[in-house]
Image (cartoon, rainbow, N blue to C red; front, side, top):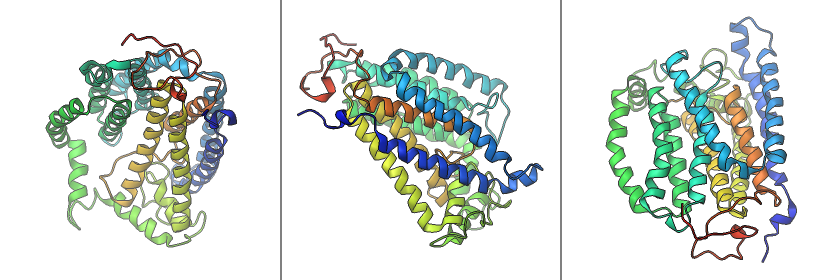
Length: 391
């Protein structure tokens, strides 16, 4: 039975939800930058206007990757993006400014966002071409491990361990979904755990945040400043919030209120109702992303859509976990809400690619090797030429 979604065309529900998130995010950028504009002697709309210029560029990216750039091109273009991400990340480490103990920026760009997109496309491309060799050591460990290993070294040098954790989780989930050998993954995870724990504790940047997170009340007060005021903001909001623009914690108490803890600003000004509305919007976004992955007509489309959706989810989950005190403080933006261009551009590119994968007329030129145990009549293999060659 043919998939009825294929006859509907591009996923319009996903597009509508993203537009609502972007509009809500622009409003939050305006209200959460009150202290920042005053501190820098700028007009109240300064950050909003900068954000809107990036939103406009984001709309262009969504249109281009949804309607113009066929997602099948990522099979080769992903390598170019990964190479650019590697070069820019190295440049950030060597020449970028040190902000909050880390070298994550260069020329106003956060290269890890570019690296992330290149990594996921390269790993998904390798897995889609694996065929019956998917459970081999080469396909399960070596090939994805090369891309992830390069990324891990660069992110550890910045350091940016929260991004590294997200990279690792997404790649591991995609490997499991693709049918990689879980025994090999378990062996690698078991060997990596002690190394990861050692690196986190010997690196001053991460050790201070972990120790602050586990400190008892009254301990390491300065390190817990952001968390304490984030929780105060959420508590002040109550059920319906203090009202748009009426939040107090953003006025010099919450550091980076328009970036790292914007969810807390939403909670204070819109209350439980506002935060639940945001959670509901993201829930729809993630469910549609997973639906697109499930209904894709190619293995590459399935894996790539799944990886991109997971990347947004982990970004979202980590931001909120920091705001409510479920994990150590780290600077992760809330997609479509936090001020800043690189993550917004990444999120818009992700949405454009997901919309492109959801279209029934895309990905026609992808050729994937036959995989035993799968029906050629299923949507995952329709309209493709198959070979029995491996990787």
